[in-house]
Length: 281
Ligand code: C2E
Ligand code: MG
Ligand code: MG
Ligand code: MG
Image (cartoon, rainbow, N blue to C red):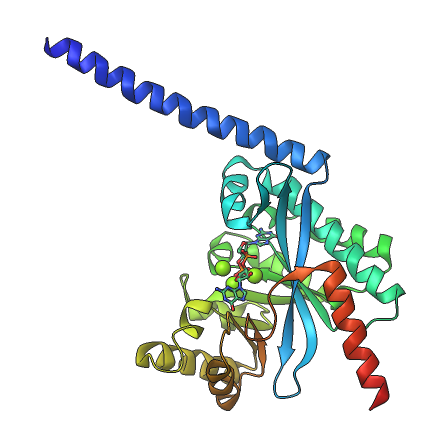
């Protein structure tokens, strides 16, 4: 009797596991197809200078336009793509697409100081500078227009220092994304050629009332200022948050308070409106 019950449990778990691994196999195949069928798309979220409210740059954020499921956010497939290694191919698509978009804006006479691109740890390999170099020269775009967003955990690997210096010396800006949520080893800031800290949205969104978050944000701004690093606050949703950050000396912000991530077409329109206005001043 006992053995039978055990067997049933075994059968239950095993079919549950089969279902899960089937889902994963299906998702992996679909992700492969998504690349071939051009189902990925980049959205762009403006980065704003305060108080001028001028668009200084943007962050490229991937979306998956699934034929049945609609628009899928990166949180639903990037972690899986990282597990399976597919992120390397997807990441290359992102680099090509983002840089070709910079070239389009340039051709249209629209100015953008920088476009930020997110990198996964698996992409952060010795061949990256050559890959980036080839894409840039194909589109005749200088590295100075590209900011690479890295995470703190990516910096933990061996030999990352050489790669960071190589990229930095080639002209790329380097930003530490989600700052304050990872290992936050301050020694990195001293030894690595980081240009920007992006204050994580979890701290920003608790401003200005949460005393702990406010203290953390003030400390991050202090460190950045003392080390000569530039700051970007992400996830700014309210005027109160924007005012608080500006008052502390963080003048670059990104968040729903200003703009949500938008299609290339809408971002192009925004640049046209803004730069048209500028010319009338
Ligand atoms: P991230 O790089 O930290 O990007 C910021 C995320 O915060 C974006 O989510 C953005 O839409 C969202 N966000 C911006 N402003 C606000 C706000 O005011 N309120 C709230 N609640 N959220 C805001 P998204 O686009 O869903 O991307 C999520 C994450 O997926 C990114 O976090 C990044 O880690 C990853 N990701 C996106 N695109 C790529 C990519 O091309 N390559 C890689 N490797 N990762 C990517
Ligand atoms: Mg990012
Ligand atoms: Mg972030
Ligand atoms: Mg994040």
